[in-house]
Length: 345
Image (cartoon, rainbow, N blue to C red; front, side, top):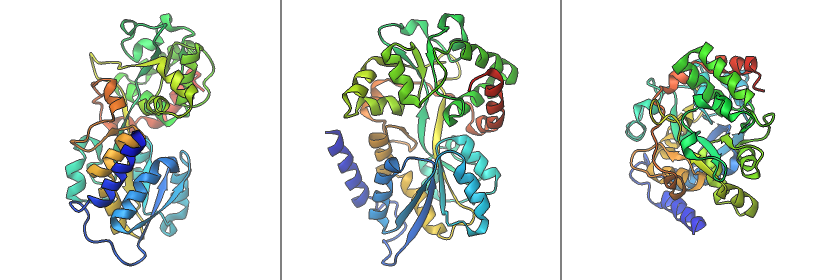
C-alpha cells in the first residue's frame, strides 16, 4: 500500500502543479544542475516529478559531506552548479558565508516556508525538518527514566549509550545547539559525560545505532527519526524486527524542545540556469513535493498544511527546539573542536 501511495503522490506531482508552475514546460532542452549531499535514491522521485511537471531536466551530482562546498569554491565562476542541496543548517550557512549562494525572492516560497526556516536575505531555504530524539530499548528502559539531552551525561547511563561519530553533521548540529543554549564550557562538560557513558566506540550510521539498541549492545541511542521510520518499512525482516524493539522519546519537552535540523537548498551564485533553479526551489516546497518528502523520505514537511507520514505521526506530536537555526550554525566550527577535546571521535 505504501508503494502505491508513493506512486500516487508522484503522479499528483506530475499532474497537479498548475497552481505554482510559472509557465508551461518549455519545448527546448532546459536543464538545471543539482549539487547535493543527499543520497541520489532519495532525491530521484522528487527530481523526476519536477521534470515531469516542468520539462526541465535535473542533472544530479551527489557527493558526501563538505566535498561539494570545496568543489564549488574551486570551480568559481566556471561552476556548472545551479543549486546546492545540503543535509543540515551548518552547511547551508557555511555556503552563504563562502559566497556560494545568490539571494532569490519568490512569493510562493515565502508563503510555503516559515521565516524561521529560511535565510532572511533569501540565500537558502529549508526543505524538510529532521528531528533527532532519544531512542530507547522498549524492554530495558522506561520512558519515565528519560528527560533531556543533558541528562544523558548522568552516571545512570554509564556504558548504555550508542551514538555515531562526532564527524556526523547531525551530531555537530546537536552539539552546536547546546553551545547556543549553555555556552562552550557547560556543553564541553556534558560532552565529556556523554562520552563516558558510551557503550562502545562510535561506529556506523544512525541505523547501526538503532540496531545496536535492539541487539542489547546499548540501551539508548541518538538518531534521526527517518532512519527508524525507514527500518520500520524495510523489506529486510531483520531491520523491521530491530525497529520493533526500539521506541522514540522526545527530550526537553519541559523547556526548549527536542533538537531539529533541516535539509535545505540555495541557488548557486554562478548559476547558469537561475530561472530553472528558482522553479526547482518553488517545486520542492510545493504541496505535492512536500508530500513526497513526508511519505517517501519520512521527514517532517516544511510546508504549512502538509502532515507527516503515518509512521511519524504515530510517534506523537512534540515540541521542537526554538533556538534559531542561524544561532546553531554559528557554533558549528566550535562544536567540532569541542567534540575533539571531549574525546568524542
